[in-house]
Image 1 (cartoon, one colour):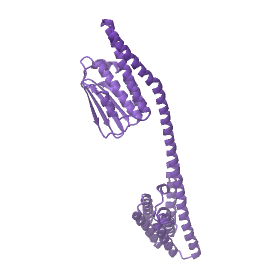
Image 2 (spheres, one colour):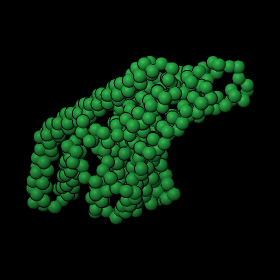
Image 3 (cartoon, one colour):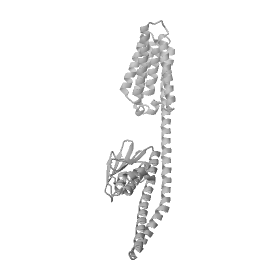
Length: 388
């Protein structure tokens, strides 16, 4: 046996004994604890009769031993050696006191429990001496039948070591199960990423190429129209072509952003917001500790910002706009507010901000978030909050 085996603690999984469901584990512990307390109380009061003060003292003593035992289990679970040894010593001292007052059953339970538990839950360098002390003390006070005492002592040593090996085996099994679950989750995430990459390639091959071709044709049409003599019809057609080209360019940019999101290559939200309003007099404020957001939350924030700015351009052109992005401990919040335009804020409020924000509200609710839109102090305010 190596030196590390003597100085190392049993694994957390072995000490916690959480291989079963939590409810079953709690019930099992309660049953074992109640059984031991009942055994100790029965052993304490079998030789009666006892007076009321003696009964109270016995109950308090058993309850105190139970509390010390619970504290020992917690200290050993946290790998605190000296507190564990101190609590174990208190239990042995209680066993000696019980032996002195004639409560042999509680004393035997404490001696045997300390011997087995020390070997099961402590490092071997501390558990073996502690078990030896407990068993020697047990043998010294039980001198009636030395053969029975010797067999019991050997059996307790074997039981403690077997329980230790069993706990380590269950702990190893639990670690392997956790590793297998993590591997399955990673495999599922990899498969999802591969599928998203495939979808991104399909969208790129169809939609992005189509939009790029439209841009080329619209630019060629614009150049041809500009060569024609000026006139009302020519100017109107040119305006429509330029507008269609602008929409195609914006659609291509948004398609590329969506493709990046599918591939997991999304730029920070604050960078996107600044690029979104680069050519406009819009103030962007970022608060909180910045971090990478999940793809769904990031896309929702981007789409809401785009929809809110579109509504401002449509219903309150020329209004000043403030975009505030706040990273909260368990969520991200976006607020888009404008100064309003006389006669426009009420119109937008009455219209319910259109179907665009309605769709964004549904999208936020699917993520467990919320979206509110309505009149503010000056103009219109759109507030989004999604878990992230």
